[in-house]
Image 1 (spheres, rainbow, N blue to C red):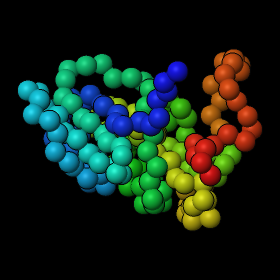
Image 2: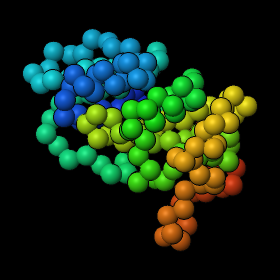
Image 3: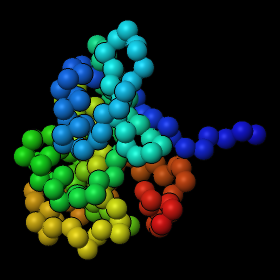
Length: 164
């Protein structure tokens, strides 16, 4: 049987391409790259040598909980900048948290309302600014929905970084 081997790109629908491009380029540091000559507004961004983010402008409905997760190289700078911008969204998945593997996890909304999870590398747990743990947007422990439905593949040793 054939199997998927990696994620090539994630496509997000945005309501204003220019605003979204500014956010992903200037706030998350993604590099714009040439897109195909589509007959609708679109922009491509490079994460690394193999993965891309595609933005496309349409009038659509945005997901409340569905999200894209990106790892950043400086969670402290990103946390304080996202807080300053007022885009940290604690409604769908709760407050900013430190996951059991040591990574910091937070959720923000891009200018179109797309939910973006931002995570630090677990190896950077000793570099986290203690002010984050004292912030009103921070909460100890993992998110608890109250649904008490434990189906799925779960373990106390889970991580977002299965290659570590």
